[in-house]
Image (cartoon, rainbow over all chains, first blue to last red; front, side):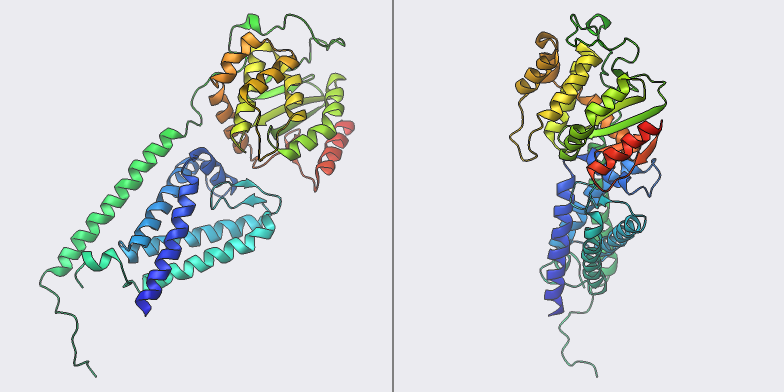
Length: 150
Length: 257
């Protein structure tokens, strides 16, 4: 039973990551601007982070959906969620009105403050599911089960 | 109590080592994929690459052959390129400097323009304000095409015509869901503003100022502009609850000198 719950968690979290990454991949410049809008990191690392985030999201998503290296990848997924929660909470606290840029876009949004709680709730949900996969890494229908001997 | 059934076979000798080998190998491949992807993405992002800047083309084209405006603006303070990405209107030494960051596709920018452009351009003509329009493009493909066309017109026909084209672009703004003006429509509008079709067609169609458009948007992002319209008075952002509020505060700052 736990194995099936794990499969569900993998598909949901992995699916979200794939969509989030794929939507940002076509416009790297916009992705960089979305990172910059948070005004949290030094300009020296902003472009690289903007370029690499969508790639990491897609790789993490594919690994979770396929069940490859579930435990370490779920750990990366959980850390990303923590980072995004901190980013959004900090933007909220500083009164910034920005789109989270989670699924492309980013930048100013007049209704941003209404969306922050929902965005944080979503990321907490993904964090919990990722944590579950770190804790119970054996899941159904995973490549890990074939590749690794118990 | 230990289960009498042992469903799992005992671990094969050396399986831990084998697992670590496989796991490490896959992790390495994943890192490689991300690394290669990073190089590709960094290459696709042309931000900061050198591109043609308005005014860099032969200077003899920058003077319009005939002035279309009857009430001639004095030569000093005539609209001209300002700091690479802006169109400065009025005397750069005027007591107040107002910068307007805007996207040609942004409906709120159109509202801001409708409510403010006459007053602001009047104040600029009277020497009360140095007005700098800083167009950027971040909404959609039309944003970029319109800004490229603006760059072409500024380059080929000069500031006076570019300012008229700027006002016309907002007056004829398409809906965000389309249909969007074609390049021919943009050229027609530019001609209406006073540009010479032969001088601009090629630049509009070939997106000759495409790189300038990308860099202009990046420069705005680095100024902390995350949305449009964004207004700065003497370098400080103006905040307002509504577009009218934004206009009122900007005009108040201009009148205060």
